[in-house]
Image 1: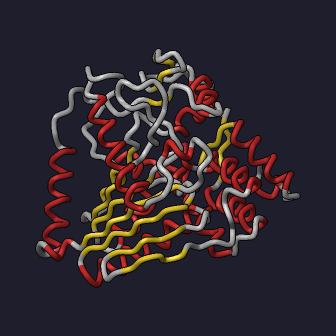
Image 2 (image 1 turned 180 degrees about the vertical axis):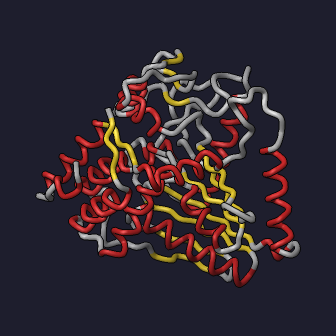
Length: 359
């Protein structure tokens, strides 16, 4: 069962929760906006259902509300930030702002971050870079989730890559984990009492499992057992080694470059997620408007391709999220009963009036 909420009601609730944990009003609004934006775009795995995880981390001291990161090294086109275990959305937003500022001045910039936390959906940051007229890339490593090809247990993170670029209409945004799916997708399937629809994960024996609860339980085990497969799936038959390579590439550009904990070491008790942000000004290569028009033409030609069936038109990455955002502007956001229960529990623990937010 689900219940529908006005986006602003959810945003106000999340903002109030973070204010109760010591975040100022502006920072609380930034975090709340990122969560609701994910739900608006149909990315429930990174939306309000994530609030419970953030509250647990705040309660355990894994996230420190009063930290905004420190610049360790800086040049005209690069920055290295120590996130000081602050809130991921705040550290990532600061990094994105620096990337935009420097790329606007020099044409290109890279910002590397260590000792941060889960920053939500990677596409949230490249969308900001794109809106500044720049091309953007964001990446992050995560707690161990992905099983390398021929291995038995998780070692790398879900390690998403997001790419954003301006078009004549909406920003073009590609945002995807380099594992088959993110961990949150399994949590959402559990809430909906649905089986895993594809060969996304293996259990502790190395066998493919379609039980989302099994995967979630195994990832909560002190020694993570089994895990999620890389893009392409099990072994080499469907090119899973390519997904493994992409996951490793993200690990290198995040944990290695920032000199923070690797995904596997986070599973052994080390703290600190690493991020990577790149901003590129297209004017380095030509007239930005002409490049924007050229990209728009490419995407429209793809959408105009004859589909296999009339029921499934050809889309480009980001189209479903744009349609979802527009739909939720009028229809509201639907949350699962389990998520609503978690939000009620949070409200009660903080002595907030849940009815005020219509839970």
